[in-house]
Image (cartoon, one colour):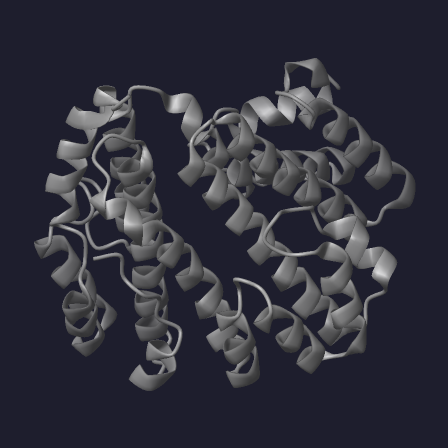
Amino acid sequence: MSNTKYTYAVARIRALETSLLTDASIEQLLACKTVEQALQFLVEKGWGGASSGQDMDKVLEAEEEKTWRVIRDVAPDMSVFDVLSYPKLYHNLKAAVKAVCTQTQNGHLFYDDCPISGEEMLRIVENKDFSRLPGKMSQTAAEALDTLLHTGDGQLCDILIDKAALEAISEAGKRSGEKIIEDYADTTVAIADIRIAVRSQKTGKSAEFMRSAMAQCSGISVDQLIKAALSGMDEIAQYLEGTSYAGGADALRESPSAFERWCDNRMIETMKPQKYETFSVGPLLGYLIARENEIKTVRIILTGKQNHFPDNAIRERIREMYV
């Protein structure tokens, strides 16, 4: 059955894809001599809002808000995008648990553009009103608060919440009933696991530590990844070569920034075929990921210019574009 409910949404997204930054626009942005010039270039391309002026953070925030506004306008069903809200939702939980345990208030720690705002999350944790949290998140919140209060170990608390976030993403992917969302979720978890293995190898972490941090997925085997990480970086690269994440092996051998760039590019690669779909949620998800990637790339360039980094140092961190 062709899913005609997406036809209008996909047509709208197609029209918007034409204004995504191309590799050529990224080159022009890189060629700007100062951060002010670069911001001016973006504003001329329609970035930012009436009140963002030449404030880098405000311009980027305005772009994020615009993206979600578009999706909310056109999506027949927003629940399939739950998978994208979990990183921010679980970040808010982490920040709230820390704020309650250390009794410090810092408003900048929270995201407000997600299902439970920072302020609300803070109240939930303060009052131990965990039943208001979705799914297994209530159990995670109680456990994280308990862990931090009793051990004072912030890292342990982070790991617990991060792993729960990955598991929630994986479950949301399966629950969506959309193959592309399931692929997106599985890729997100696999890349997070690979990052954990690489970091753990560098810092000499134990198998037990890695197991407590990694979430299961179908793209890679957690057991084999842990075994490789205990043996060395070369073994991680060797293991990846036998999976669909083989590109990560070359990137690992090249440099840490090449590996970070590969992690983001791999997601864009997963999404690119969605440009040719017409009757599914795929193009909407593809557009969202493309915009997130674009905003991240622009942030890398602007921050580099702000700190007077040479162009080649900025270029090696730049992500692949969707268009």
